[in-house]
Image (cartoon, rainbow, N blue to C red; front, side):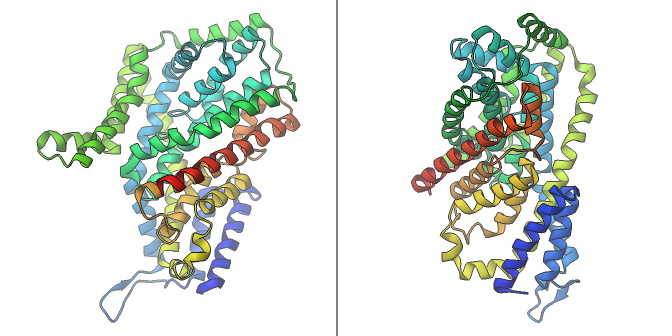
Length: 463
């Protein structure tokens, strides 16, 4: 199958994959692998390897699947593991709570909505948004009682801040996986920088939506002030000794600084032992390994070194599904790359290229809305888009990074009942499902639109 029928088969495969994941409850890894296998057969990829008349090899479907799977692990497996482990350490030691307190002190208690939103935005850079909301919810409740601000406003402010950095800024696994799949794993600092920049519009939109929705919806999130204070104090006490500001920031700031220095050395063309050493330390794997080492020292600083094994084990357990889904996305991307689809789209680049930055956004948004997981949406979309980057006009690293941001924006659009984060936000905030749709679902639609609007503007300037 070639040409337009293959394009139609591709979209049918995507719909089938969505149904398998969201309706039939088949694990995303199995769903993506089965769809990749079926699409490979439909595309006419041979079953076994063949040596062509010109001496080149035409690889069979089994080999293509193996190459897509192993290639993904080779490029991003360790990076995802290290990023997840850093986040787990910050969560278990109270580092995330320390980051939140630092942000409150920075912004001030007179701006509680901004404070809680930025608090979530910072904490979710290393920590999953679901965990971040659970960790920071007692602080949100305490701020509501101290300031008399709408509980619903504070709920969405925290939710939006967490969600925005979750889809845009490494070392959260979703952005790392998407960036590496798109071939910009060595430009992780650029991804972080654009992720920070692309957060501006959605943060502003999220703030104003939070203030507005707080006047329209009232939750059951009414807790006695003394009880809230007790919950907050119990949370602090459960961590024992919180880490210092430096040890909390070091696992995040130092890897970023190493990657920044490496980029500067490359741009300046410096050579010699010291520049090569700094370039080595600035590669994403090594930089995050340094961050993990600093996070491990944080465990010792708070007297919880005996938990190191358990933290590593829980991190690997949590990151396992992400790794395998990422690899499955790589398989799907490899199947697309060796099929006739790329050639056909190249021949009709004016049609598909006309969608520009909106193509990865819409594809990611469809996957997110249909199956719920932002990480799965980002990984799957990146695997689909990767072999089409040049065809779609994303030729340079900065253009590929903008495509990565568009995928992240789509992965916010929208959070509803099939998304675990929807239920975390609703249940912890005392929202009914109907209120959850008005607050979280409508709000994430606003975030996604604001994000892609900013990315579209940036693509005009940077692309």
